[in-house]
Length: 252
Image 1 (cartoon, rainbow, N blue to C red):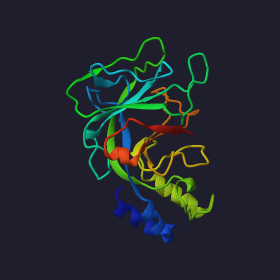
Image 2 (image 1 turned 135 degrees about the horizontal axis):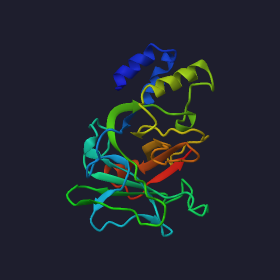
Image 3 (image 1 turned 135 degrees about the vertical axis):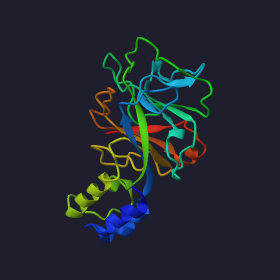
Image 4 (image 1 turned 45 degrees about the horizontal axis):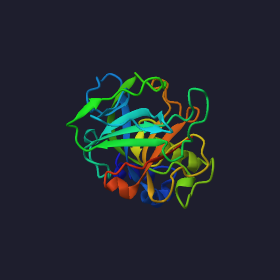
């Protein structure tokens, strides 16, 4: 949905009197849809499977324990809509295991190093890289991704300085329904992070923006914080330079 269509829907809804607040907080977003019928190819956008990386790439680790491959985004697959994302290049995203195979806590969701990424500007020298063996991080399931431009509004009152809706009111319920209408599912780029249980803004700071939000998925063996969402953030200025060297995350 685009901004004009959404604002027309707002103007005819039960929260029309808050249209200026909503207009001011709209952000671009990209919905992610899993196409389970498509056949993965080298360099395509996908969740799961193994990453396509330049020859000689080092698998990310934390305290000598390998990260798990989350997926990769080929920015050329995304329709350009002034989102601020790169127009090309491949971003491989890796997440540290929160617990080791022995059940010991390994890293917390918002600790530095929980998320690592490898950005490859060109796709000329890619090869599938299998994860290190013996760590239980293999994920044979993989699914191709499709992208659909949309917009987003804040998930809750913790993400803005002023919130005009009373908890559990009819206006609040209408707002939630209107926000849900903007997304095809739980997985999307940019916009605002969404979660299941947090009572705070998961963004690390004012300079950080939401890069990726994904829900738990049994097929992909994703269980973020007992079946909730994983939210990944990047500093806005670094995104402008396609710098993904420092990402942060939270889950809930």
